Length: 407
Ligand SMILES: *Cc1c(COP(=O)(O)O)cnc(C)c1O
Image 1 (cartoon, rainbow, N blue to C red):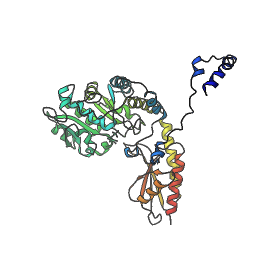
Image 2 (image 1 turned 60 degrees about the vertical axis):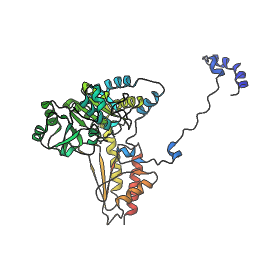
Image 3 (image 1 turned 90 degrees about the vertical axis):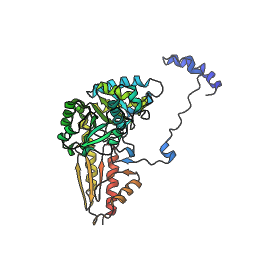
Image 4 (image 1 turned 180 degrees about the vertical axis):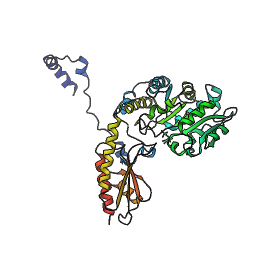
């Protein structure tokens, strides 16, 4: 509206306003009318980045998970004002701790950071000098006990602090290995069934010798009871990813447990510097987003959610097995990534395509679909990252490509 038009409408508007029973603030009459909203940028298109239907799972390299709208709203609505990071962490930590039966909690830059910072806190306590000296462990405890079957790549998070891993297999090994240098006992939840010492016994051994225990349950948010199970069990520190099953920010995670240990971990964390954690920054939006994601996750109707996951998987399974030579099976992993998981395998004499080529065809199709490779000629599909309706597209693309390769 040009100014002349604005003035002309001034003589009309108040009357109309009164007639409509409303009074317009004078300012609005002179305000430049808002320009029509600019079309939303599509950065994926602009930069030529491929997007895809994620029928694979919550994999970091595939950007993990999609945040619920409430989480995105939390991020947007907190982006326009400043707040002190420690105050945000204090308030959010209290809420998370209460939801998960922990004494205290803090939001970290993913589960990996939770592992680093939690270990650092155990090593340093509240001693600033020790915080400053990590990863140099002169005069500090330096050994972490890990069951042989738990000694995976994820221990690198723990050894970032400078500690050495001591492998054990049996309770007797633990008793033998413990000495004045033992700082912590680390448990990898998904490896639980493979080890000789179960979680409860691990905790009991730690308590007996007054050694803090930590559990990595990064991808094990389901079933939801896991969110408090390990705090109730007595682990001193519990570490979980925010951007996997919980559907929080991909770059966030939670460290929770004993109050003194969380306080010590925070001394090793941003916003403080001069410590090993300074690079593991989480912004206020992510911290608040993590809180909202956890709240939403805990309050979900998990039975209903599970049924939806199963129905989607059934639709894809039924389509795939119509192709001659294809076999399907649905399983639920024992610990990590507990969600219905479909394995589709084929007899290479009847369906002439390698797993790699098949995955490539799905990837290059329209829409692009990502699945995971399985053993031999097979792929694995989960449905928890599918948006409503995408199961139909996955079913049809999988059937189409299998059918094309069938002889
Ligand atoms: C994913 C994962 C991590 C790392 O978690 P981030 O949230 O990606 O930092 C650590 N441990 C295990 C077992 C995991 O699966």
